[in-house]
Length: 279
Image (cartoon, rainbow, N blue to C red; front, side, top):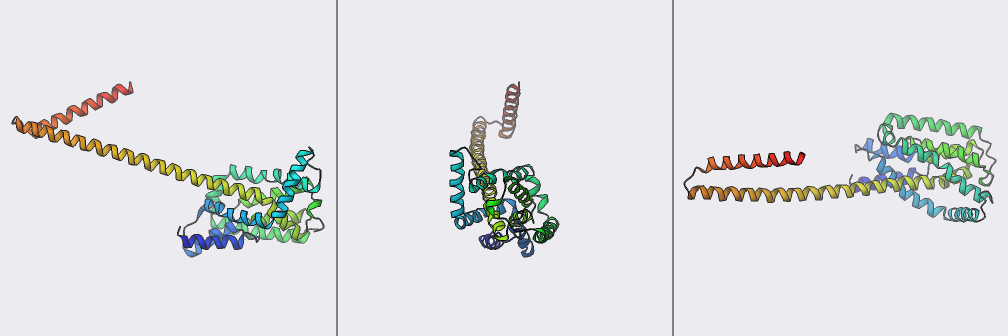
């Protein structure tokens, strides 16, 4: 991937992440139409760390309030102490479905599920579900009125985002509308709920890329060391043969015959040594 391609895909991610139209789908579709290679699920996850930073900045007040509420609930040993305490601690189990399913089907999500026909189908199906949620939702609840189990329903909807083409924000907004949240509240909660999932996925991919880079560097180092040792051995063997030829010429022996004889003896010695090691 060239720097220009990375910049363009970063713009695509930034423009589509905060709309219910699946940034992952567009990170797959845009390169296809431009004739580029698929950047892969790892790139899609890692680039979302920028999204995570933007959400943290925009919702800094909400994140701080919920964090303090969660700590307050722990201190008083009451996770339902206030609506904010309940909301903060409900986000944790609501994130479990996407984590468990994401790790369990990791290979399929990163490979087979990135087929364009799957992405196109997911985009259409989610759009229809969003339309249905918009039609049937009562839209008469705020975040403070969410119960634990309603939050878990939204968490299950978030797991749909594992299918490329299903927008994470779109699926959670859909879930919020189905449980009666107002539109603005559903969108706000969508991003608060996405913080653990986006952060976890981006951090996991970043660690995997660093581990692969370290492993590659280690393998290159070993290969270089082996090549250097082989070069030294080759020089030594060449020097031995040169000395042997010089000795043959001094005593008027046939150099080619002695060289072949010497090489055959050394090969037999090495072969017997290996057999002894195997025993």
